[in-house]
Image (cartoon, rainbow, N blue to C red):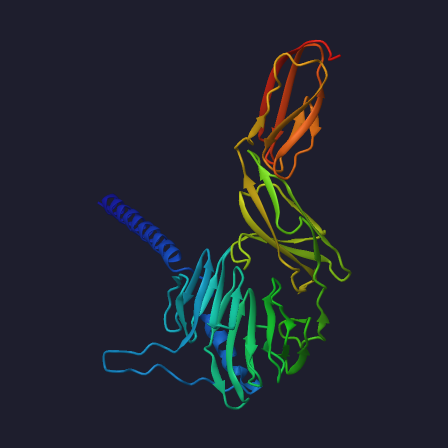
Length: 438
């Protein structure tokens, strides 16, 4: 009887263990599904911490936005104020409303509301547009929590937008006449207030980067910025940058590296190929002050559809596997986290061509005398021409003429036209000549 009870207890223990294992398995599957449909991004604790930091920015004199959505009836709730529009996206971009938990995929043209969080992932970017003249551009793996443009009566600013950022954020804002406009960017390391110079029509072009060591770099290409951390304020002028380490006061700003000058390939170059894409060599003129270079290659002039974005230690780069199409490239100089402005943009085109060039040759009459004879014809403009293996000149129209020496007896005339993609068209003629003319 004791043995029976022990067996019963053992069976119950095994069954209980099996139930626990099954519960753990199903719970793991459930967590996996949550991870797929609701990306982790930044945790709610971190977002709330940064929201507190956002509110504390009033030490700069910024008025708090205390407006809240008001209910229009017992059943209808008004949307929060419209902040901006997500005008352009590439690859995976997600957003989260201030009062929601889930992140949802976004499409171009989607409205963004006050306190919305926008996140880009690997090889993704997004443009946030406030109006026709003011926008922000998010790089890959970035997080922004934005505030709508609004009037600040205390600072007498025409309007201002406050942004919290992780990753890389570039922006352009414009002031009309004497009306001041500012952008406030808050990171874990510093608060930056960026604006065009007062009293003039102009832009403020800037970049804010949260680096891998959690420091923040604020770069001003045009305009001016006030950067605050640990109670210290530094002024960043045009073409200057400052890197701020968390829990440390900002150091003095440094000048940004001078933009490099592209050298090769030349503007509007065209590269042809038949089967194997050509190797494109990129080069630029170096300037002192740059330890590295940032090379960016894209399929569009706005650099939204980026093909390659890499930091290089030399003023040269080669790419040999680009598909047919139009491409745009630019390069900037880097000194540590300090990145200068981009060079001018250059464009080139890659064309796949498998069509042999046209070739017509005026035949040599039979029975001509063994003497010099001029071969004439027409081929594709820009093609290379060879007569009996020797290069011949081709006019811009594609027409050519070439003098050959005919020998008495059988002569084999071979003409070759080779286009830029190495497609070849042949013409051959067998001609029997008699003795030389007297």
